[in-house]
Image 1 (spheres, rainbow, N blue to C red):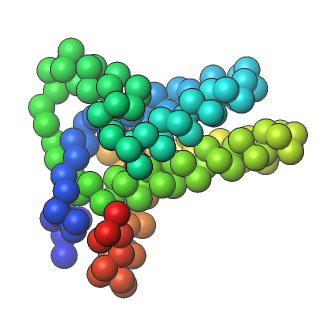
Image 2 (image 1 turned 30 degrees about the horizontal axis):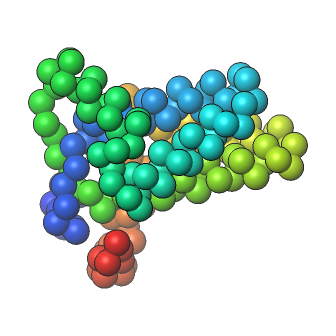
Length: 149
């Protein structure tokens, strides 16, 4: 089964997701520079909106959609289930950063942030979504994975 076929029959625009990855990475970098935990709260709020509520009302998603229109970038659809799993990973990383912040373990925060930034920037620059690759592997082993989400 090719990675481009829809495994959950929901498609999302990959270019909007890539802009979103850039904004997430920029906000994580700003957090590392300022240690302002409210940046992480904003990211957690945004991920929760995208994953559990309506992705269209997410501030980062709205900004990404606006920029896609400004730059007149064509649609490029990909499997929504894979991007949703990547979003769960993103939320997990943000929660881990919040916990590390309150535990006041700077090296742990830095390690988590480096991994998170690597994933986000790989998606933005090279359209290589690590969470999506994990999704495709899991779907081969467990075909019903995330069917009800």
